Length: 254
Image (cartoon, rainbow, N blue to C red; front, side):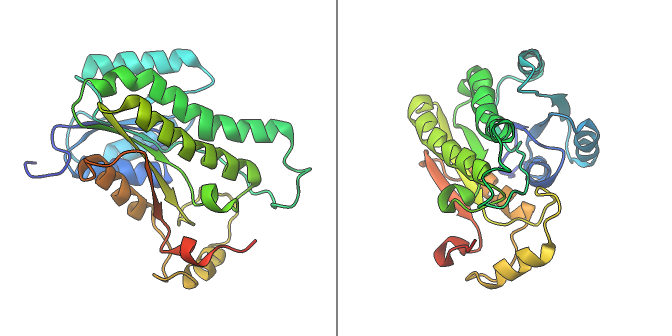
């Protein structure tokens, strides 16, 4: 596997059972990485992705932000199996479609739950695995954010606010973790996954037609950006990369 961009590297990808996380795990493994697939509830999804990964040494483990013991156990398992972590990809996330103007439907419990998985969780994972990242020269963290962080328009206002906070967290972590660890956020626009339940694919296609590149973003496109952050952007940190077919150039109507 010589000559591949991630040969000899170890990567932890959260939310690896589906969507962007799964696509990222597949690409990193294809590029030579040993991949640890983190999941919250979707053990079956993570196992299915694991079964298809090229290379050796990959494994899946539960990482549950509402169960600190699972983070500690995950740390122990990775520390026992690997010398360190070269890459942490915070891809786990959750949302629910709530009309932007319906503030009553976005009650406190839902708002807090969305903040927890999309903002608190990435911080907790970075805090937990920081020692393993700092063991590896050139290590990186990539937080999967959203164009909603920039526009305030997305599946709901809590999600947009959480991703805005995640981008700010990225900047702060880049200051704190440098020079040992580089930190990035990647902000996709509408991606062709089942992340937002019940979303009409025609809506994505209509939006894509208005972008300069006139195509729907795939999970694999986002994974390519993660790979670039980890392996190629070695003199960058604290930046956000939009993977949106140029959607941010034309805006996104309510």
